[in-house]
Image (cartoon, rainbow, N blue to C red):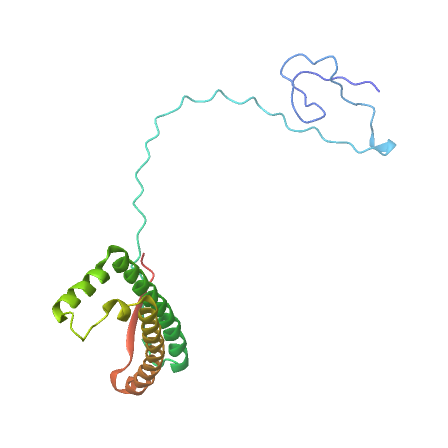
Length: 191
């Protein structure tokens, strides 16, 4: 195979040489269609890139700020509430409130006992009543066991009453929705 590449002629990969050919650059000339090899037409001659223009001062026009669309609003009406669901939620909240009540009373009792307020009140009551045959032992009445027992009973009553009353109010709400139209709730996607 003999091959030659002349300046200005396309190379096998489609580029044109602007100077003298390199010693290793060759172009096949022996291939003809009669031998079964495809003939590749020469690629167009590419002109060298012109020198880049000096950078111009680019003035960007300020873009208008994007329009904020008004927040969407939806008006919904609570037409019916399930009394059993209301009772379950009220029960859970009442249990939490009962735990808070018991904890607060225990903390308050320990604070009053540690600071000596209960003993001081007992002495004052003994002085007022007198040391006769009638005695009143305030420390026995305000013993921790008694105070916590009463507190637990009050908390249990609170849980039962709140649950029952919440269910009753849910039933009453369902009965009055026809007259009042229900509770209106407005939802929006604005943040």
